Image (cartoon, rainbow, N blue to C red):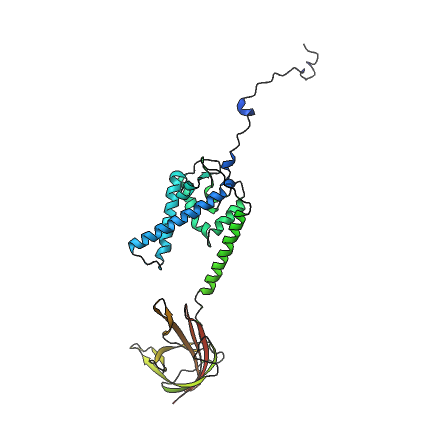
Length: 351
């Protein structure tokens, strides 16, 4: 019995080393440099440009064949549907669109596998998000954020995919500044487009201001003589601050068979028919919104342009309903004609 049998210790004996398996000791194979998403950035950008040019040409041909007007929203709708169908069908079948095949790049998963149809579907439906606000600015920002090892746009992040060179592709020299410069340029143009669209959108219609204080009495029906003074004018070449003039008003009360009565205001207008609007009582006076009037303001591409004028009044009558004061606001805004507005104050009395 060994000397240390009662000590609870084992006598040291040489251990036999088992041969290690080749699989455990062999270094893990590294993906080739051509499989890195960073290497495919330049070819990927070239591919999307070519794809979008082809889609634009096909859209124009389809519109010409169907006879749709190029100026209508059908261009955008057709291009969007065609784009989504094009990218999904091609990438789901082979991982390559025409542009990707031409520049030798393909869609893969991050582990280098062929993506599933579900992954391609996510990649496709989020493509419009990547394109926002313009020039794929959101997608380029995502490519920058995900780094050299992934280079994923938003659709890639959700779908778990990226774009790499295919077996026949060779890395194109990609300057370090290319992707940052493209991202900054696309973002700057997108911001400029958004600002231009914001300033070009129609202004909210300006309306006359009401009166504070005591509630207005009801008017007296009949003919009124009204005197106006223009307080301010912007954009109207024939209206100036300080202009004064007089007009006839006609206020009439009418009742429907069930006994509901209301008032109507009729204003005499120069060189055009009189304008009539219902008088609606509110807390700050009696409101009247005159019918929209159109005035020619120029010609563009053989079409005459019209300037729509919105006119509103708020009236306050004295206790016996025979004298009144009023605020008027005229407002016009149209592409090709510009913007115009004026503020007018009135005093009127029953004849």
